[in-house]
Length: 363
Image (cartoon, rainbow, N blue to C red; front, top):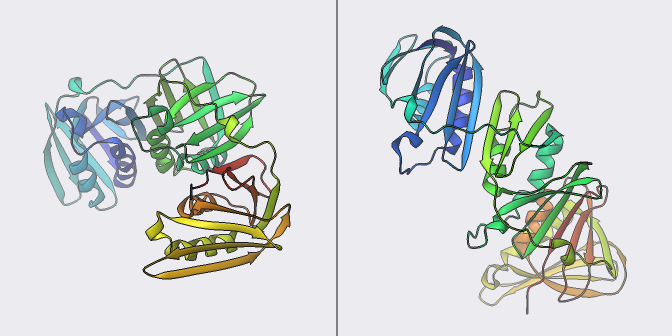
């Protein structure tokens, strides 16, 4: 193989595909990135057997071929090269890389040992505008559980219901639901949270307007221009989460998102001794928040609110409130309180497509 590409394009591609390469792998080739020429382009690929990523870049191809090269070394090396062309010449399992006055030889592994990344051509195909995809999955992925003992809760539940497509995540202490768009097809899958997190970090080309999704029985693929990520799906049944969402909300309070963020941040400083527990109160056209730390002191803050319903207090995890507010772009939010031992609802006032539910702490 002999190929010439620009340093900028090669660096960008390596920074994307190298994200899925693990530091400790049972197979040495899994620590490598695949380079393969095809149709006068260069394909870069990496996989950890759970997630596979490919990225295509334009190149001047003299002779076709392939090789796998240690991903970390190649990525760091290319990032330090000057702008301009990078020439790569492969002989057997070694790559000679030259860029201006820089010249190196990196030993690799035969490309035949690299695991194939499957092509997903399932019956379920979905196209989501890139900006909608980013907003929707960013608003739910942080709620997915990190506890592998319940695998289904570590994923994002993507499903169709009553003519709409939803993304949902829960760790059993909180829940986030986002109505993505109208959708008349069928869909009912659980996507690993890490898959979504990695793909969101890879999306840096806003000029590509659509994320193309293909789903088969066991796998899902996301395509954005020259980038494709393939992942296994999580096998299992997602909980019937809708039963956790109260139908009646006796008390609501509309407040400034910024002001609620501020009092949550301050009050949480005093909540560290109590596992982040803060007391949220609604009364007299105010929303108050307090926390007591026996060794440090106490804090009590309040902000103006448009309150409808009866006075109420509830104990919540302050970090969960902050997490919810961090992914809401609306200037104002509505708090829905349904009882001292019942869930708290958080909704953007100007966006009915998003709902965040936080379960109360037992006092």
